[in-house]
Length: 413
Image 1 (tube, rainbow, N blue to C red):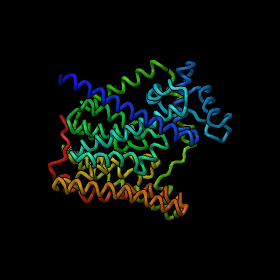
Image 2 (cartoon, rainbow, N blue to C red):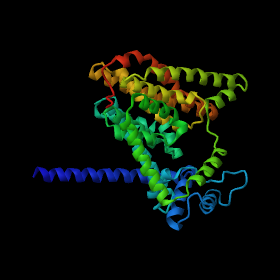
Image 3 (cartoon, rainbow, N blue to C red):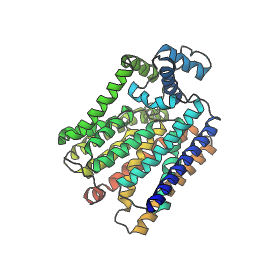
Image 4 (spheres, one colour):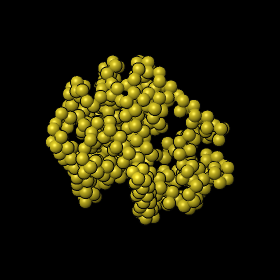
């Protein structure tokens, strides 16, 4: 009898989960019908449909012209974005299931629902990473914070795949802590699909792997890479050179903000020097911290990874506001350090107040700037807001964290 009720309970959970996902897709679809077509999703989705429907390469002229007609209503002019596919084919494979959906808005709504689930999953993994067991009300606050705070909203509206990268990053850190080296290696590889965002982290951790001779982590990454490349070349043997051409064309029509561009906008001469000077100064600090983390102290590795991610917006690398969702991870690690050692009610209250204050304060600031129609200032302030809070805060808790017994990574040899 108990097994019967257990099965009924599981079925009920599945039905509720499907209903929630269906509700997300319906709400997303209703919202997206009021927005223009998003080329960051349209191009890879339509490229995958072209491949599955007609057998043409998603990098082919036919696929490119199909995207142009859908987006512009005509072929692109000489100075317009040609909408060539800029993703490597192993990443394009992620769009194949959605390519089976013939309606753009429905496919985009499903993609948006997957992003929402990914952000919620990242919140769950971050709680596991900092070893929290908060009450359900605080768990709900954390989930809502990840999805509905400004950077999460930008990620959803842009349809940016950085939400999935952030989920892979949180999973990698958790697997690394638990000594699951092969899984950590595979997730580490997935975090590197956007080198402009995670390249410095990847360089540091690869350096750490080689220095500490953690060959099982490297083996896990290599196995996944071989599988992805092998399957990609099996389906489309000549994808690599067309991908490079599409990526090069895409670079000429992307104007993402960077710290140097923002400083130069403030002051063409002093701002440019300030931007490069700050980037060089942080580069030196980063090298010092990387060198200090080479000893086999997993807590130091975690702290250095968080600092490396928090440094990224200050280093002159072009990034969108949606990219800052990956900074939720160092934010949650920082929050875990702050409340560690406090009594349970006090720790939960501190975490709730901090998350609530960040959520309301951020949206209040955005509302004030929008009310004054200072949209450029809004984008610039939000670009620096979260990393500006994280970098000094990480140094504030540095000594305490590196000597605290928890949370701790336990990397297997």
